[in-house]
Amino acid sequence: MSGKEIRRSMPLFSIGTVMQLTELSARQIRYYEEHQLISPARTEGNRRLFSLNDIDRLLEIKDLIDQGVNMAGIKQLFLVKEQHANGKEQHETKVKRDLTDEELRRLLRNEMLHAGRLNRSSLRQSDLSRFFH
Amino acid sequence: MSGKEIRRSMPLFSIGTVMQLTELSARQIRYYEEHQLISPARTEGNRRLFSLNDIDRLLEIKDLIDQGVNMAGIKQLFLVKEQHANGKEQHETKVKRDLTDEELRRLLRNEMLHAGRLNRSSLRQSDLSRFFH
DNA sequence: ATTCCTATGTTAGATTTTCTAACATGAACT
DNA sequence: AGTTCATGTTAGAAAATCTAACATAGGAAT
Image (cartoon, rainbow over all chains, first blue to last red; front, side):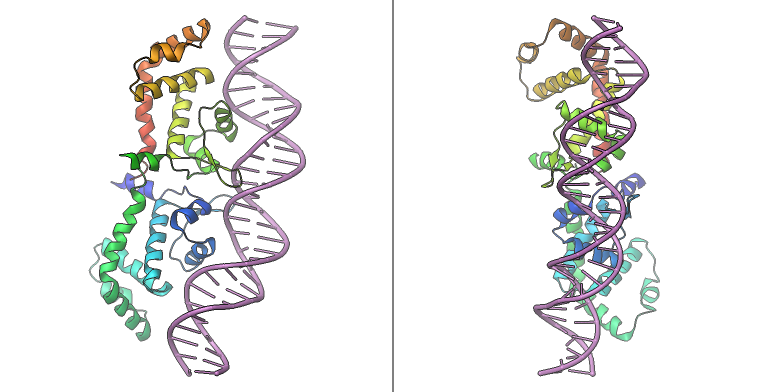
């Protein structure tokens, strides 16, 4: 169903509402956007408008940060996840082509440590979905 | 499920969002509140915060207004509906006790004319629910 | 131990959004 | 012609949000 996707990506929530829903500060939310972990829509007057997907992402981010993953790690995890969702097979090579050795090591360690967590994070993701209907 | 009720009554949306979702003007929304057709929550700073239920109600109101029902009529219809939902049997007598003859006639006519519509309105009501997963 | 970096807090000033209250108005009714 | 209803419009105030800048605790690197 593509309609579902549309609904979930519809910009509906102000940052104030999102703060309460996620228990993140405005500063944190903006910082995560600055690091391109989310890309909320904007009103004509430049105020952020968040979708359900944005909120799910923020909850995932919160989770990952609790487990010690940093911005770069989260970004890569999202990339991997996206590629996985798209059923691309060459992701291993493609994703990691432009990483330094250092980053690569850190990433692999994170993937090891938190492989199981990621799935839990997906469950957590549905927490918010369950809020609706 | 009472959890569902809680979710649907959670104050989440600013008036700007609701305006777009319902295609009603701020003036209209406030006017309907003034006539107690909705009772949105408020932030600490007194801004309105609407729930999914509020939005469903607004869509119903819009529908009824399109069919020529006025504020008083809509209020009574909501009362009847509520009573019906609560499985009260004496609603016929109780609800209409304090209506003038005139109002009663108008109400009955509306109920006749729009009995089928009201159900459609209930379908319409789920339009928005479908927005969320 | 010092320095650097990361994630977050805090503050300031500007801009947008929303609020209430008041006045205006066309349509329908009396 | 005068009312009432539903809505538009305007004005001024207050709240929410924005960006940018500076501050800082805790870890990481040197």
